Amino acid sequence: MDDLYLVDRLRKVMRERRAVVVEAITQGSVQDYAAFRHLRGKLEVWDEIDSELRSVLKQEATQND
Image (cartoon, rainbow, N blue to C red; front, side, top):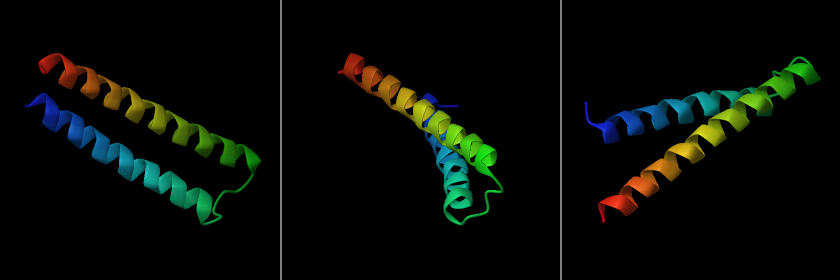
């Protein structure tokens, strides 16, 4: 399996899962503040992982040039 394919697939899954969390927060289906904080934490994790992946891809592209 090509590394780039794997990264693209992973980022797609992450975007989909992040969208589910955003929808839960914005549609008001959060029961209480603790649940809201938990979902916000998930968003931060998805964003951090995506940022790290983009950084690695950028470094890889720079090294290959």
